[in-house]
Image 1 (cartoon, rainbow, N blue to C red):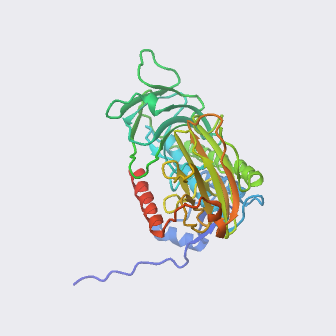
Image 2 (image 1 turned 180 degrees about the horizontal axis):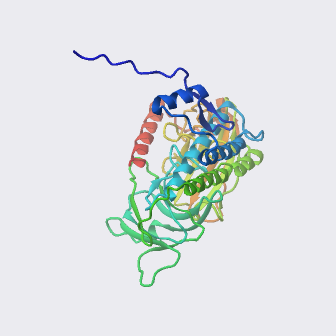
Image 3 (image 1 turned 45 degrees about the vertical axis):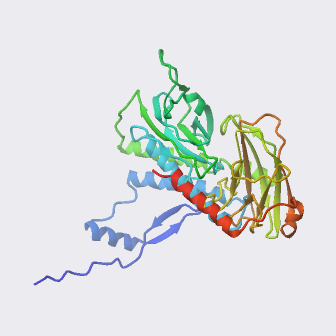
Length: 435
C-alpha cells in the first residue's frame, strides 16, 4: 500500500516585490511571512537586523538608492519610454558593476563579454563586440589566441574606477599574428628584457583591458578567440572574511555611483545645443579609441517628420552612424535598423550618402529606426579618418515630402527587404555573442 504524502505547506502571506526610488529593485518580505518562511525552513528565529552583516547590507542598499535618484532629475527626458529605460539602465549598470567587482577578486583573470545587448554603456558601437579582462596596475598578463576576420581589432587599457578613462592601445596590425591568426601579447608596466613579441604598457591606474572587434560585413566576418593568463601571480585565494565582503560592498557602490551619471553631461549637451544637428567629428583625448573620431547630435522628431542626414563618403577605414537613448545606450540594433555602417549604407546616384531618421519606415535606403523614440542621441564614428573631414549635415523635413528631398532615382525598399535585413542582423548577433 502506497502511503499518502501530506500536501506541501504554503506560505500564508505572499512575498511583496517593491521597487526602490530610482528603479533599484529589492525584495521586501512582510514580517509575518518572513517569520513563517524562516520557521518552515529551519524552525529557527530570524536573525536580528542589527548584526554587523545586516548593517553593512542595509548601508550598501542605501547607497544604491541614493545613486538611483539621479535619473529623477527634472532636466532629463521624462517620457514613459525614457523613464522605463532609465530603470533598466540602472539594473544593467548594477549587474555589470557587481560582475566586475566579483570578477576582480575571484582569482585568475578571464576574458568576459563586456558591453552587449544586456550591458549597454557609453554609446556602445553597434558594430563592435566588446570583451574585457580585469587587470591590476602592477600585474603582468599574457593575452593570446587566434584573430578572426573582423574589419578592425583593437585592445585598449581603461579604468572604470572614476567612471571611464582610456590609456594605451594596440591594433591588429601591431599584434604580429602569424598566417593562421595566432598571436601573443604581453601587458605589463615595463617591458621585460629580451621580450621580442608585441607589448602593451600597463598604466598603474588601469583596471581593465578592453578588447574591441568591429564588424563591417555582418553577414561574413567572424569573431576571434582570446585567452589570458596572469604571469606574476598565477593563483590567489579568494577572500571570504567579513571585512573583504564589506570592502566589496564599498567597491560596488563606488563604481555604481561613478558610472551611472558618467554620460549624462554629453547627452544633455547634445540635447540642449544640437537639436536635429550634428557636431563635427573630433578625436577624444581620454575616452574611446585614439584612432576614432567621434561626432554626435540629438534627434527630436514628431510622428510626421524625418531627419535627413547627408554626407560625402568619409575617407576612413570604417565609418558608422547609430541612434541611442537619453541614457547613452545604443538602441536595439538586432531587431531594428537603428545603426548603419559604411558597408551597409547605400550610396545615392550622385555619390553622396543620405540617411533618414523617422519613426515610420520611409521605404527608402538607409533608414535609421529610432525604435519608438521621439528623441535621443546620434553618434557617428570615423575610424582612421583623414583630417579635415567635412561634417555631415542634418535637416528636418516633412515625412510625406521626403522623396522631394532625395534624388529622383532613389529606390523603394520593400517590407520584404527590411525583413531580410533584420534576419541577417539576428544571425550575426547569434554568432557575435556565442560562447
